[in-house]
Image (cartoon, rainbow, N blue to C red; front, side, top):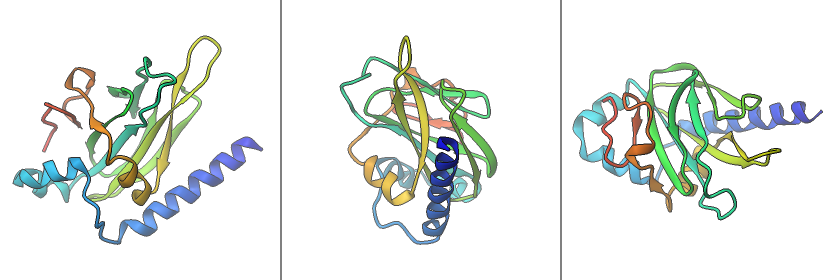
Amino acid sequence: MRNLIFKALLSLASLTSFAFAQQPQSATTPAATTQAENTSADQSKDSQANVYVYRYKQFVGSALSPSVYCDDTELARMDNGKFFVAKLTPGKHVFRSNDKQAGVDVDLKAGQDYYVRVELATGFMKGHGRLLLVAPEQGSYEIKKLKQLDADKVKDRQHVNAAGVAGSN
């Protein structure tokens, strides 16, 4: 029953994000401002999808840095109150954290922005990360007050943009 509810919420979030993806966004994210300054990044935006991965700033679990994976490749270790941008090729991708039971399947479209929030779930010995796909309107709002992930936390420099890291363009 819980799995059915989770799938229904995931489907609703996906449908909402696709429905609103066609509308122009009026809010500019900090990462989008940086990309606007780089003309080559603007040209490559049409051929890739931007996945914003972020984590709220919270006191509980602040010492934990769960990993974020895309298709079993570690992208970064997620710090408290930070975000990063992954530039990925269009198509189906699977995102997960260190909780292998929970993940997000996303069919990325070229030139689209997607938002994935990392949440901490309590465990027996320690907490672990779980990912949640959120609507672009919600994600772009929630990411405004966060800082870019530090370069030392990035594992896949080919796809990830973070503070002081030049991703693939």
